[in-house]
Amino acid sequence: MEYALEVKGVTKKFSEKGRDFYALKDINLNIKKGEIFGLLGPNGAGKTTLMNTIIGIVLPEKGEITILGESNKNKEVFDRINGISAETYFHWGLKPKDILRFYAKVYGIEKKAAENRIDELIRIFEIESILNSKFGRLSTGERMRLAFAKAMLNKPELLLLDEPTLGLDPHIAQKTRKLIKLINRHKKTTILLTSHYMQEVELLANRVAFINKGKIIDTGTVSKVKLKHFNTYDLWVKPKAIPHKNIVKSIGFEVKGQSLYKEMKTKEDLSVILAQLHKHGIDVKDIKVKRPTLEDYFIKLAEK
Ligand SMILES: Nc1ncnc2c1ncn2[C@@H]1O[C@H](COP(=O)(O)OP(=O)(O)O)[C@@H](O)[C@H]1O
Ligand SMILES: [Mg+2]
View 1 (cartoon, rainbow, N blue to C red):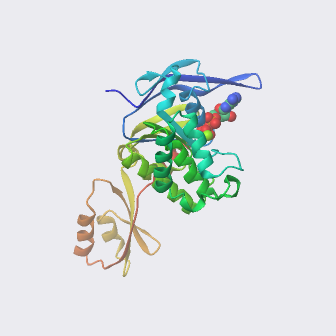
View 2 (view 1 turned 90 degrees about the horizontal axis):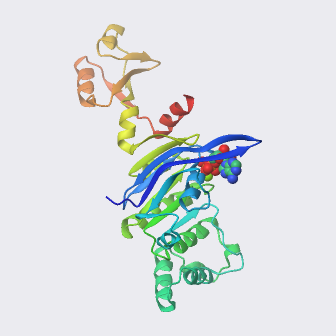
View 3 (view 1 turned 180 degrees about the vertical axis):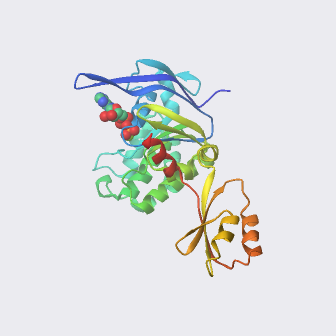
């Protein structure tokens, strides 16, 4: 199978105050065609360094990177990919169409085709209303939509997104995630996305790799990674009256304040538990289920 992106044994050392440290240590990743792959890790984990080795502006000590079946030493392959980071910035005095035309030229798109493509992207990313505004006057959300339009000009087969929602306010971040999904679904673009925001990766990615201190800690489907590390969840039941402690114990609960608490196994059936409560004459007023998030998982890993 040809992957959209293969990272093999990539190791990168930096020197800081005369001391060497590994920003990346034997990184291995295979990104399948058509998927959204999330690279999740805290600040300083090595995410941007990895992105930079992929696009060839950071040279690793060891390892190989293959993009769409070709080595990234072959610069022609960069015509087939594109990227966005939260720092994507254009000249303040240019209007959206100036910017898109400029990049269409950079990408060597023929003039007529470029105009058609630009019109399509303006529609998709809802840029019509800002066509007369200079970049410097655009809001963060508008800039982001323009950055996406620019990144889609060359019909990239692989899109690299380095913390695309970093510093955006929540509703713009949410819109940005919608754009990412749209691009993936309608344009079949493979996406590698970095984030330090667990929920984002959970929302967007098919598969995920956790990176911490330059090392991949775990990789797999989001649900598998969750299942592997989180096979329990918390259940709280609020009864009309707290039953006798022997009854509580016999059904595997404990009393916590005004509630009954039980740590549930993922495979345990909630309806069986509820039937048991009913059988013991326990009237349930309220019920609360707390499932662990990737964030919980990450905190656990970071503590190690
Ligand atoms: N050019 C560089 N020289 C020295 N250290 C660097 C350089 N670039 C990144 N680093 C260090 O490498 C580590 C990983 O950084 P980075 O890849 O930016 O992390 P992330 O994007 O996950 O926040 C950090 O400790 C950072 O300070
Ligand atoms: Mg970064």
